Length: 612
Image (cartoon, rainbow, N blue to C red; front, side):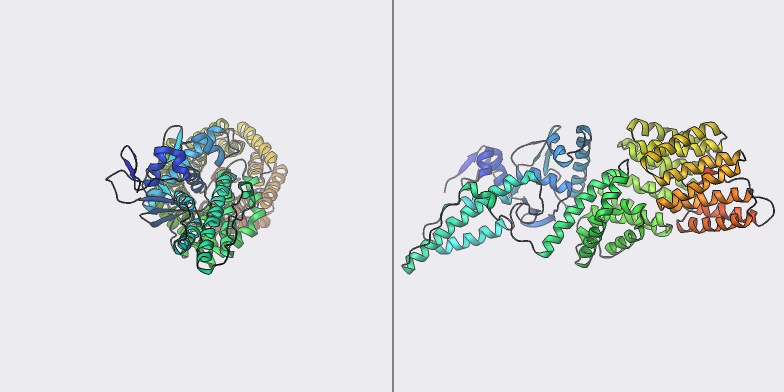
């Protein structure tokens, strides 16, 4: 037996696999996976052939699929002996992002990967990080290295039984080929190389077996010519998929789409992402049904956990709630992060539907899960959403500490886009308490951040909400300027809900000036835009405002009817503040005197306030 040594690393036999020859000492270290005298066996091993997995002492501790974090680990494991530039990896994962944005996303992804490793008990040094590069830890081996060694072993003369066992073992290790669920073009050269090695090894072993049979039968062995390298592109290197495999691949593909959508659905590209997901929605529902029916907990939780931002302001919101309830009833999947997303999403959708008790329960559970996972962004989002539960329950003073805590975390990350959303919610709570100066400060900070980010949506919504606060402090000229600028932006973006809010504010300014007919026309336009958006919160506000001007025009019965319709909608969306103000208005409408003047728009729920 030959002993190969490099410094303090020892291999029980000379390793001839391609990876080790290419990588020198580091490759040998990766293949052997230990220092002399330390550990008796390889502890960590990444499986790339067939099921993508991580093994510890031969036991599978994690099964990976096709998420971005999984693809990142796959890039490192397919070429384990060399460092990878962070810039190259970010370009592969986010090809359409600017360099700085891609690198920032990569850092966040590494944090998520580390939290996942911690959750399933994997060493946190599996990936070696430097400022510019990432690399798989040299002490981690892969099954590709085992396969190469097995495939390149010389044919064993006439030892037919040994050759047959080696053929069986070769097929067992190779399985369905390299990362069969990942269709990334970056893996194709290595996939074809391994397919060629497999076919050549099978041909050599078949020849050995044929010669062994010839020796005992006296028949001439059949020819098994070597397969030329140029034929590799025609090799059937993947085993035929079963129906279950096809379904899993479909869900992986949809999961990648949804994962990308989650990054853009909160911003200026929301309408585009909603349109893309609408086109795939029947396929998504079909995939969810299959995953739930077949008890594929990880896949179901991953798909629905990523989809709830789509359901949030969509006519299919009830579908989302039902899917999430069914998935949570299946029990916890092995991967904690999709489960946390599903719990979080259930809480947010419950809040949007007005089920405040369930929303509070689920969001408290999500907060605890995110804290345990160390995911600061979603931890802050859960805290913000709990603040919204308190605000929507008519307890704005209780909501403010939640918003302050969420802002502290998000400013430290930093996460300016999420800071903007929490500032909006804090402004709504301050307004409900009559703290107009504090509300104005929050919204002006939000407007400045949106301008700095170049986010037209944030700027428009900040202007719309700022107009309402300025109205409350009788700064009507400045309020009109902000409302008209916001309306123009919302019209350009095709945002019907945003237009409804601005039209209502402009109508209220005219109401204050006793221009009832012009005011009524704007309120009616606001109702039409809210209906076009399918936004019940906006529609309830617009109906309530129109009730006031119709009363002032002398149409009392119509005003009462509009108030009752608004009350039903406020109740449906769980807006306790809205329900209370309609109740007061109806009490006034029961007598000859009008209600307390036109309603103040600053008590309304801002257009984009809410959970996240």
